[in-house]
Image (tube, rainbow, N blue to C red; front, side):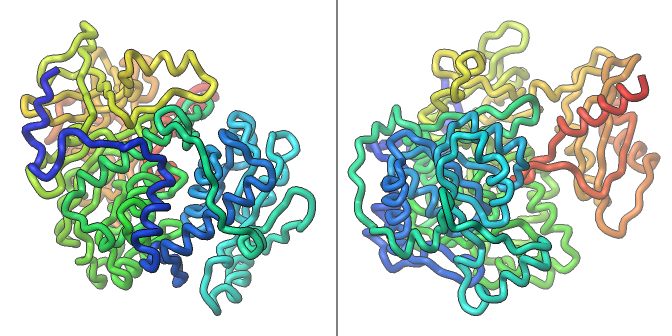
Length: 560
């Protein structure tokens, strides 16, 4: 196979990496020994060193063993970004368990499905979420509920004030029963011992994580990621960011750790490289700007919607964002306008990458400091193969011919949990069929034109939503835009654009129509525009196009 992309690698990036048979929790063990007193976490004023983080993780791991956790048992972690989320993650691995990341936004129905599908034995959750867990516990395999609160890791006097803030924001202060199978994390860490646990882990075969896909269509599937999958992607990420200095960088942790992108590019990378993590439990533009100015993070992995929200904050010019040196954007296409504006504001580098949950998640990225190609997702990471399969022949496509992107590498999942048929549909001869349509140019740079299932076929023409969205984002009045194909009795499908305008700005459908027609062929121009105050998004900020399509279908069914 001709890996044309390798000629674009800077000399500092190896074509192949040694993974040394490590487990993902070995990163914490090694960093705690090498940098015991170095700051590992900063959370709303509270700080933990690597030594403290490792000790608390070991204490919880020993408690897990005490209450019956055996190798391969699943532990659900239902927390926002906070120290407890990091401790729970590594404690599960140190005890030989498998982490099940659970979105804190899940309601009872979603939570019940995931806990039943994974057969999780223990859940570590936020006190605010405890009522939801209690409602579904009896119909799941959960034996033990461990509860923690934001206030548990706040410095004095914030920890005393927080219950009043919680009552004001959420209308309740949760009281957790102290009996039966309910445990308080503060008590566990005060009484448990930090004893090393000897494990026999096969990194290539043993699972570290069950990461559930977003489930925008049908039920979510549990992606089985081994220790090697996660170790490989973390080492690839480290090699790609070769100018970053071990033990010196600060990483802004806004991307949720219950999403694999935040888990790899923020948490696992930081633990491996002894970087300080500056954690925020939820994204808020003003809080983020204040945090960057005060704590001066150097690395800022994010998603386009996060960068867009910051750029559109009315007072962004009042903040010093010059500490930001590099950002890799993922989860959705990065509009060129957003990239250029964010680089101008920070003076740092912002490049687009690509990945998916099934690949731990990153497979491609543009170079941060060397040649990059705007509009491209860049080139495959070390040890990662990629090719485009022709939509007509199923064979490898010619340069610039659009087809399905498939990838192969040590970061690719073992399969879907208890779903052999679905696994066989996407994993063939170790190649992962991504379902994304794209092409590769003669220099080995890859481009995504859209999801295979999101391509719009209107009047016989293939229309890629991303191309239309790029044009819309170039309009200075638009903050966010997403394009979808909706049912049309004449054309089969027609193009509809959902628009969020910048605050205080007005714009008509006619204005947008005139603007878009200057840049696109007539058949690609949206026939319908809908102005909204906000768009539906996942926790990581990915706009849910399928949700909008389902809304349209529901409207249509009511009319008929």
